[in-house]
Image (tube, rainbow, N blue to C red; front, side, top):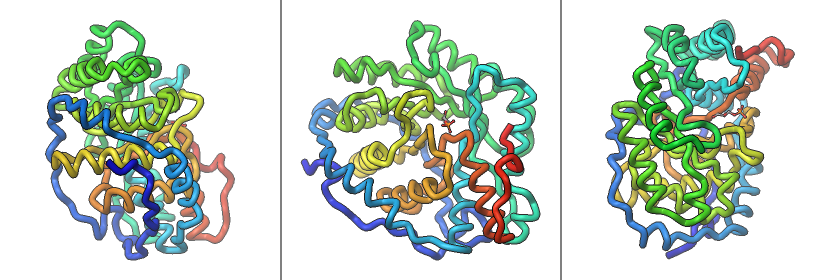
Length: 343
Ligand SMILES: O=C[C@H](O)COP(=O)(O)O
């Protein structure tokens, strides 16, 4: 099998994206959920990751970005529509969550959107801890913006399994339609793939109709090969999305990890026909980084993935920077960051 990362395909963003709508020009297809498949250890263990080739390719990505002016504004609006606008702090309050939800409903000031001809822009979701779900659901009523809840003893995932499953069930009952679970890193580090598969399958079952994002905490998995294997195992066990990080590890989303996870999604789709989403999370706070991630996504998985049902940014502060860039696009001047509070 060819190790992932060996080919160096060019990364380009086509400059045909309309500013009229964040979903313009891309196919709108309703997506069947990934049902999962039987554990296929031969497949997972056969995966290799050529770390130096992957890192070389990832290092070349930011330099290849070439979108400017209206095209850049269009891609930034697209990025907004793909954000899981997140607050995951010990000092979260209902007031902060309500303000965050107001921002999710109206992520960019109306006069800026009007100037670029954009309507109806919202973020992809709002992401909170369990205790904040009901507040968020109330604040987003009537908007169609989903509430995602982190779960299963987030961020470490080391509470008893039955409590982690109960937590999922409680969060779904409280109104979360997306559940971000954390995997047990020890199952990856000890190569206990059956345990990882069983845990993921149990989490998926507990989610019922809610979509499940599997957080791999890639910064704690030791190698890119482990990232590739864990990605495949979680998809085999029925993950709707695979997500890099909690935002609490010392290393969170990176481009090399994203390349490996996107290749795993591509491989899984090619072999099973099931489409699984991707969510890089943690430390993505700059507009230019968001555009680089979208370029990589489009290059590796194609335009169908550049939609909220198949891609999200997990980010608490990215939106503020995007709003500043959009304001600069419209007025020619940068505003101070304090003019773009999140919550
Ligand atoms: O899942 C989302 C992350 O926790 C957000 O991380 P961030 O605060 O570094 O943007």
